[in-house]
Image (cartoon, rainbow, N blue to C red; front, side, top):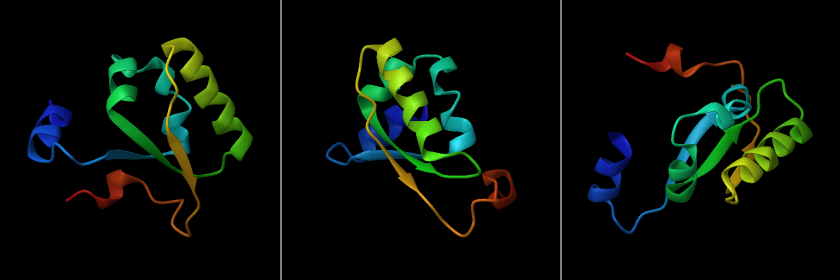
Length: 88
C-alpha cells in the first residue's frame, strides 16, 4: 500500500528501502519480492553480519527472482538500534 502512494507522490524519485542486515538475509521469503526489487534499491545497514553473508543472500535473491537486486551496504555507529526503538 505504501509504495504505490510514494511512487504517486514522487514519480521521478528513486525509492531506497533502508533495512538492517538481519532483515536483508530474509528478503527471499518476502511476498511479492520480485515486484519490490523492480521498484526500489536496498540500503542495508550492517549489524553483526559479515559483508560476504549479505552479498551471498542478495545474489541468491537475484537468482530466485530472476532480477538483479540493487543494493548498498552501510556501516554506522548505531548498528545496535532497531527501528522499533525509533517509532513513536
